[in-house]
Image (cartoon, rainbow, N blue to C red; front, top):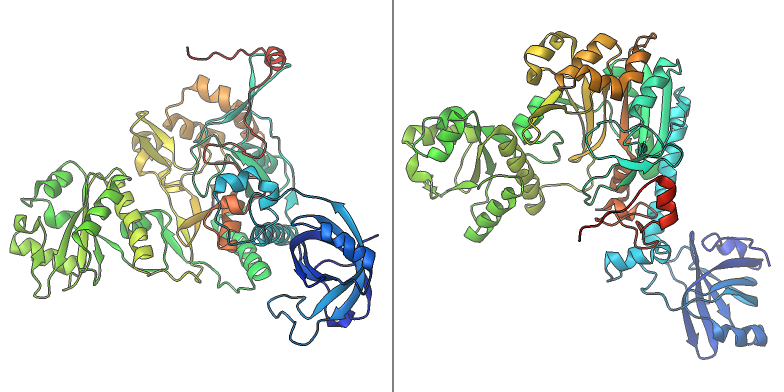
Length: 588
């Protein structure tokens, strides 16, 4: 018995044909002696019928069939009787009258129904992921992921890119998150690192003259997880020589436009709009703004810098800011809701959230209203566009805290108030990021993107004297409030690269030990180059309309970075550890 068709391939044009189908039993129904089975494969369902008048032996054998049994059936394609059609099924106009049955494998009762709408915990699903992957919606996601990969490869190949592999076992370099380390048996006491990205290798490929490179590549980061993060993830990695920002943006927009057309049949309007990092932070608080709705932030620091409300005035005197977010027409928020918003922003290190309700007569209802003069109130009313029925939220602290807290509150309000059009895809490029930021915990500068990002030419001289004011030639592509891609023009001059590393506080011995091979390569004739990497998992998650990347990855990890299906990670054997020169020390 050899399969001739898939389970969603047959229609009325096949009536009278003999076919062979193979798949899993979705459901079995016994209607007065005639047994109906919905047979399922990755394409869909077909109803197969076991009728004793067709073949008594096959009909008798069909009584053994249970859910998730694997079957091979041979039979005749019949048109369903009048009144028995099912317009909800692609194959709902036909059925297979079975003349031969082969039970290819039996199955235990599955831990949950193989259906989309199931009430079962994610942990149970992940523990039985091979079964969960049979569900139609999950299979649809994985198939869409494949189509996305095909579309991307077709586009980049057509643009002259070469698909070139880079190593998984490489050197640990500081790129933000923790590396996954791999002990070496041959060189005991030394470790490889799994790459957080192919960053240095793709730059070396540009120096090797390959001009245009790409990979759809696995990357690894040992970091705390959430709905859109995994310890192993996939990115679309690109690098180009002899180009500038405009070239990279044009190629990226062309790729994304083809992807959306091929997968969703949506025509995107290009070029995508641009916004500087400073404007994004000023208006939206975050460097990945969701532009599907308004609710812009307003800086009122100048108005309240001398106010009697010390929370505001002291924040400004200490170098901080005060910003407002006007929720238009939301004065119906209860006190509990207002308190809940205050709790919400504490997640982002805010100490609290002040608020003002504007009553119908224009007066303010708020615990802080009494602390402001009429002149200060009038100035705020004008600056924030406060009108009767509005609720205005205020944040006062250091700029990073205020912007993050109100920026995330803005997104929260956009969801809560139904301001977001879920069918809209709103892209924006964020440009001119700061090159560096100061890490208060480690008391040192760190690269906002990575240490190989080029500063803008006019800021070269500020690297040593005023590093926080230096702008970079970095750019992120943001879609609906999610960063889906980011990159930069790289440093291709050794002297400038050394200055950038020294601005991070690295001594010569440190940067030569970590990046000596790159510095040597930069002296060999490095072309101007730059690139971009897209988060493939996150992009597919958006295309599938899923809230978590775990639903678009075949075998994902949990939030504790474990695989419930294979029970990984797991302890290593004593002999394995001895081969590696390792010993496990546990706290007693």
